[in-house]
Length: 114
Image (cartoon, rainbow, N blue to C red; front, side, top):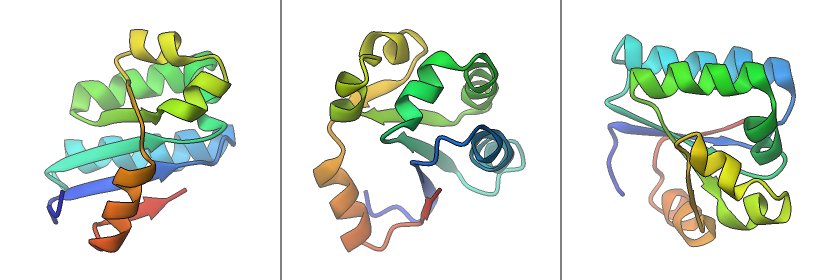
């Protein structure tokens, strides 16, 4: 980590409007307009279920991925919500994020929490 050209977006808010009009919009535009070299969206909590099951969100994620946004999900959350396989089928990396998030915070990496 320790890369100031990477923006991390910790996506915990499962509100549809917020998901589409902040997380998806900003992450996609950040790549399209080259505001950030790398953009990583971390799916955490209830957003795992939203990302796996909502057609609008899935389509917006596909557009973001095509623009170069990387999606990764908290493995514990995805397991508890029963969506590991669905997320993986969408191209989302499912891994443990507790320690990695702690390091991002300690290193003062660019991080937006939504």
